[in-house]
Length: 299
Ligand SMILES: C[S@@+](CC[C@H](N)C(=O)[O-])C[C@H]1O[C@@H](n2cnc3c(N)ncnc32)[C@H](O)[C@@H]1O
Image 1 (spheres, rainbow, N blue to C red):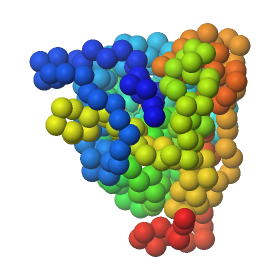
Image 2: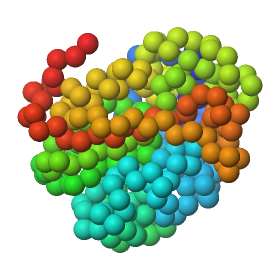
Image 3: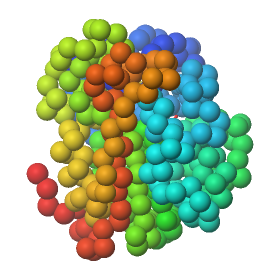
C-alpha cells in the first residue's frame, strides 16, 4: 500500500489552492477506479494543484527544457525523438503537457508542437510562460485530431500514469501518428510501486507486491476520488504498446547522475543510485495494420 504522501511525480506538500472548498484531508487508499472516475479526479486535482506544482518544480523543469523525469535526463543528450536537427518542420503532439516546457523546447528546434492537457489550469501556466504553438484542453483518451496528423508524439510523465486504460491513449496516439511516426513517453518506473514513496532510507525496503495493480486513490469524505494513479508492471506496459499497433524500439531506464542533488517527492539521489525511478518507452507506429476496436488480443 502506498503511503499518504502518494505515488506520483507531484508535490509532497498538501495545502489545497482553494482551501474553502476542501473541508478535510483526502483519505489515501487502494481501490478500483475506472476510466471516467480517474479522468474526472485528475482533472480536478491538477486544476487545484497546478499553481503549487509549477512553483515547486518550475525551476527544475525550466521554461523551455525537455526533461524526461526527475533524474534530469534531457532530450538534448538523449535524442529519443531523433537528432535535434531532424525535428525542424515536424508536427509534434505533446500529451499531458502541463506548462508545455517540452513543447517550448521543440518549438525552439523548429518543430511545430501542439501541447495537450486535461487541466485548464496547467495550460494557463503554459500561456503565462508563452510560446508560439497551440494549446489544447482535452483528455488523452479522446484526441481531437484527424488521423495521421503528427510525425511524433511525446509525453514526459503526462497522462499515462494517471489513466485507467492506457490502451485507449495508445490506440489514439497510433491513429493520429503518420506512418513511420514515433511515440516516446516516460512514466514512473513500475518497480517503484513495490517500495514506499519516500526519498530516504525508509523508501528502500519492499513494502508491497509489484504485481498488485490496484490503483492508488485519494478520496474525499463521500468516497469520491480526488486523485488517482494506476500501476502497470513492465510486462503490462510492453503488452499495452504492442497490442495498440505500436512497436517497442527501446526502453530507457535513466540512471541518477552525480550532478543532480535535487529531490522530487520519492525520487532522490539515495534511491536513484540503487533502483530505477523512470521508464521511458520509445515506440514506433507498427505498419502491421490498425488494431481492432478493442485492441489486439492480450492477457
Ligand atoms: C506530472 S505532469 C507532467 C507535465 C510535464 N511534462 C511536467 O513534467 O511537468 C502530468 C500532467 O498530465 C496531465 N494529465 C493527467 N491525466 C490526463 C489525461 N487523461 N489526459 C491529458 N492530460 C492528463 C495533468 O493535467 C498534468 O499536467
